[in-house]
Image (cartoon, rainbow, N blue to C red; front, side, top):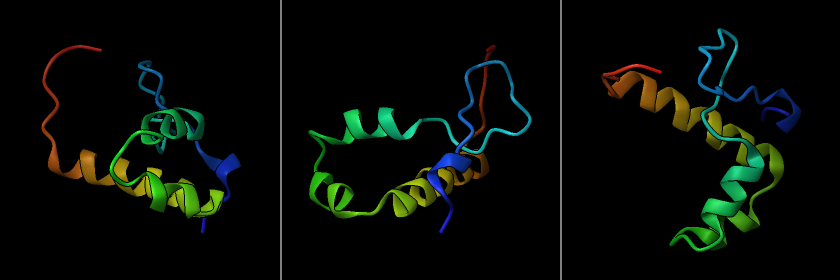
Length: 69
């Protein structure tokens, strides 16, 4: 599992080394009132970091982004 300190958040500047679209703190806020809150809260920070990076890879693979930064 990746160390949460390895998360590099894309901030809209087109960072070449970004591996997530949300920080751990942003995800914590968003998922507090989410249907998956119990599973997220129970997960370790390493698992949360992995989930954020995996979600970003899925979005990049499946989405056709249109528009400007």
